[in-house]
Length: 375
Ligand SMILES: C[S@@+](CC[C@H](N)C(=O)[O-])C[C@H]1O[C@@H](n2cnc3c(N)ncnc32)[C@H](O)[C@@H]1O
Image 1 (cartoon, rainbow, N blue to C red):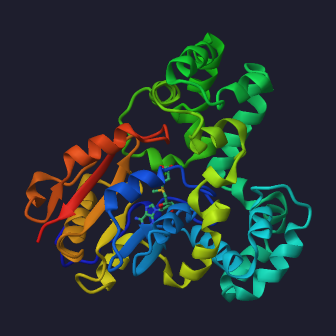
Image 2: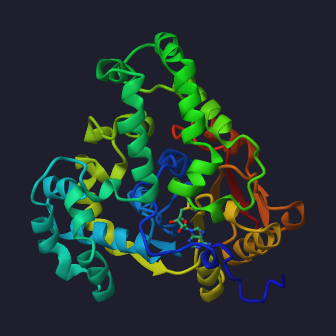
């Protein structure tokens, strides 16, 4: 593809974009924070998804964060969170989202709805049931994960066994205990089946998201990574695995940064720095002047692209971002990086990337990459 041609997303043509697919972000915010090294003059471009990492980056106080998502339901979710942060106190905010119990969510929503754009208000007014149940679990992937936690896990572990996963203990002790639980043959079989390609494509993700996946044993891959995270990382502070297995955050002070009470007032003061863009990242890159963005969080979007589009998008990033800037992204099931042909534009920060990936508290990802924009 010629770099001057308009970049066009492939995945946006292949998936229905009428539902919230992700109501939480499962990509470890600490990796982004450490990888992107945010400064006050940064203008950050970030894949929106459920907005959690847009808000985590915002808390580092860059000049701006532009959240982009091809799925209007995802930007509608972040728009709702921003409106809620603007209007509500912290207690009502976490009740509205379903992070804490509540029976008055529709009433709380009524207090923020006039802050929403007409199309986002319309979107949520037709989804009263989702609001009533709490938006934190409304995504297609989160419903899938919750069904695993509610319908399958109790057949292996009693509640007191599960809560022991997250007790503070030396890593050796945690490992001894956890290895016995996750090594149960029936658990392994169930995990591999539930997170295998067929079931995930049908119910948790979308078949189009597997188009470029060559991994033969997706369930086995996920099981291995899950075991690695449970035995190599401290579970006591791992809110990603805690929510995955228990469907809740015990302690909001150590939950995703945007939910922490100690961050809430600062978040309120910063939200006007967020810009929302519904559309493809490829279009945003085309539409902004060169040097507008300095840093970018790209989630694992390269995974859904053909090798040709990958190359074109990496090239556009290398040309469009500010020299000295950085991009960060994950690989899940498809290994993707910029090619050697683009070394005059993008320089992989391999040591940093590997060091950060070893700290990844979210257990899904095969790799994390940080690349620097060449000057
Ligand atoms: C890349 S997905 C990652 C989710 C999870 N890691 C997974 O693989 O299932 C996160 C968000 O990126 C959005 N997205 C994917 N490709 C995009 C693109 N080319 N432009 C804008 N948004 C995109 C999706 O709509 C989704 O909300």
